[in-house]
Length: 245
Ligand SMILES: [Mn+2]
Image (cartoon, rainbow, N blue to C red; front, side, top):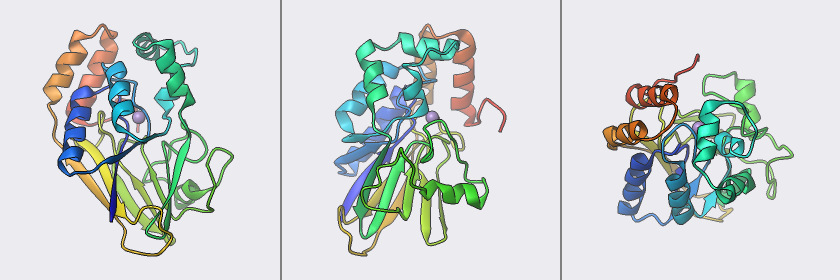
């Protein structure tokens, strides 16, 4: 059986990313996919890009990655943009929308937020219609092989698995900005890679404690706007979203 580690939503949190990469290596897993939001919110977007480029073989775009080349009047976005070179920002812009693969007879599609847009969010508590729409074909998805029965994504920073209507919907959670448990989150999928033959298939959810205090110190030491520092540090400690739910 083959194993693929799926990470997402690093958000420039280097201590969390390092801890997760060490955990993946300790499990002898060689294939890593990343579901976007490498940058945004956290203090080390540049280093996060470097590590993801070095370690992940497939990477899709997140909403923050997309915003790095947009002209938006927002101090948080402007600060993140100021940390990156033109080349890094264009690389984020060029990232693909989705990944599709056969694994143990399952057609699995991976993307950041939903098949509609990196900016369109679907939560685990949304209506069944909304959750079923995660399996839709759109002009953004790859659609090489047909309609997927397994969807994996990031974006909501909330790891979960739901089985319904003969389908599986899972979220890998967030490496650098988890919003349920203050520990880094990622998934491992195990099955026969590129096999259309039905066989055993599993999704494992892993939590990795990491030195949060280090990330807090890196955030404090950066020249990020004070308001953004406070909000990010609060989210790291509490694992609660700063905005309204
Ligand atoms: Mn995110």
